[in-house]
Amino acid sequence: MAQTRVTILSRRECHLCRVAHRIARQLQEDLSFDLKEVNVDDDPQLVSRYGNRVPVLLIDDREALAGRLTGGELRAAIKRARWRNPISRILSRVKLALARG
Image 1 (cartoon, rainbow, N blue to C red):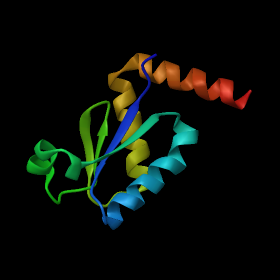
Image 2: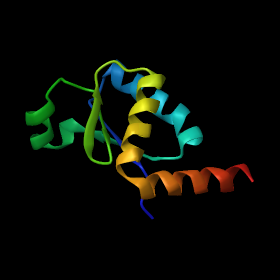
Image 3: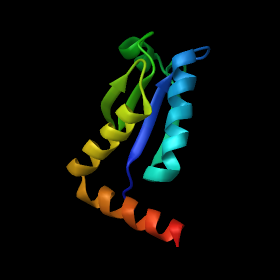
């Protein structure tokens, strides 16, 4: 099943990365999306591309947000991504409805 995927590109000792992860976890139950965190230090290509410009949030493998972010910004970015991918939007609503009973 295709569900919205949120990937946080982060680095060790990055305060904004921890904040972004916490915000994403808070929204995850409400918006129903897969969440993954990737440490750019583990991949030389990612270090070359992003360097210290973290956190970077990818939604369905597209760069959506970077740096300091709010829950409202992440919520809006996820909703925009779902309009690009209708099956993701449908599946997230079904999963949310099943979870709520």
